[in-house]
Length: 309
Image 1 (cartoon, helix red, strand yellow):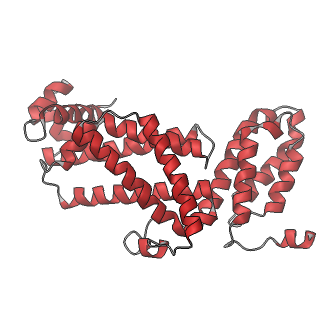
Image 2: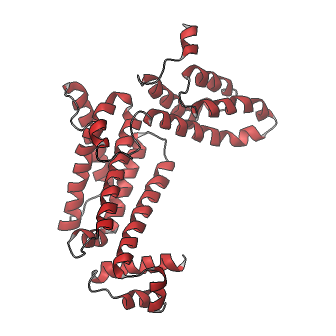
Image 3: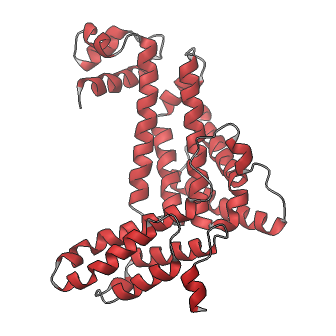
């Protein structure tokens, strides 16, 4: 841990223990084992320090969620469950810091308010993209409405944990949230209701958000990358040399702006010669992502598939 990160870590600990106004720069310096002047080399004021603590917390949360997601099949319900559980665990473990930021003790600067709003919007879009990755194009029109329902549920339970000291199991809560999400998906699909919060409406106040028609293609790219990574040791062998062209074509095709399902299916068929590949979870993930991509009505029809029929 470098000195700047050490200062941020100690500042967070001191703020949580004593409160923002009660914590002095000397307290933080003592906790970090450095001279007070050393803090001012990195941070001009306590206000700048608390903002950096908040930014560091957000970056840490994003990194932990990304690391959690990498351990599970992309676009799976288990991945979503584990990410929600991780988020609940992290929010609970930093409850004092969250209470500090939301209690009115700190007069937030305009920059910090903007940072907080952007973090909320990014989290919202992240959750929306998770839903589209799992349920596919069929729920995309309702993806933002579903996100409102689920994130509202999460927020209220977190409120009980932070404000009322409720002792709730993060695993039990995350599992319940995923199940209520399943109920909501079925309800919206059967209702015939028009979406309330559409992509177009969301873009009016968050134009830089990464969402829209690319979710299914991203899922296909991620699934193919996971399969190719597992294939690497096989391709290094003399026998695996024969499969390198098919692997290269699979990588190239899934990374293209409009992947052609017939080409991907052909490369998967060629790669079946690799011992055990047909039973790998990574192979199943590619096939599931490919099926979801084929179901998306927005992409251009595959001319090669049309010739086959």
